[in-house]
Image 1 (cartoon, rainbow, N blue to C red):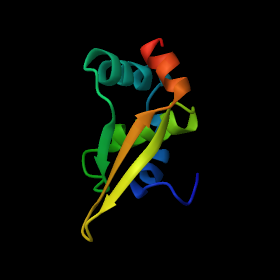
Image 2 (image 1 turned 120 degrees about the horizontal axis):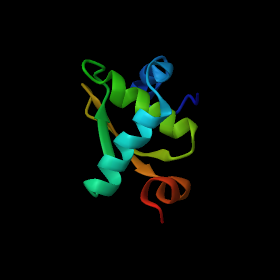
Image 3 (image 1 turned 90 degrees about the vertical axis):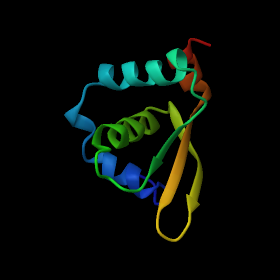
Image 4 (image 1 turned 135 degrees about the vertical axis):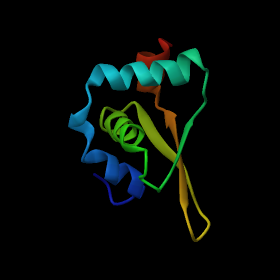
Length: 94
């Protein structure tokens, strides 16, 4: 865990073992390949985001995603995550 990680990723790390790697992979295939997303956005409110936060934390640990941007408006931090080159190969088959 890096100090520079968004709080939502830190939150998600405690739930990584709640789900399987296959569940995470399937969700990223749906988002990035099937729905052709360029990035995933999460805010720092953990309510209802346990799986999303855990999946981002897992993917960052696996080297599939990186945190490319964080915006803080003083009330909320919004973070975006993109596929790494490894992620593009494994998720998109590129």
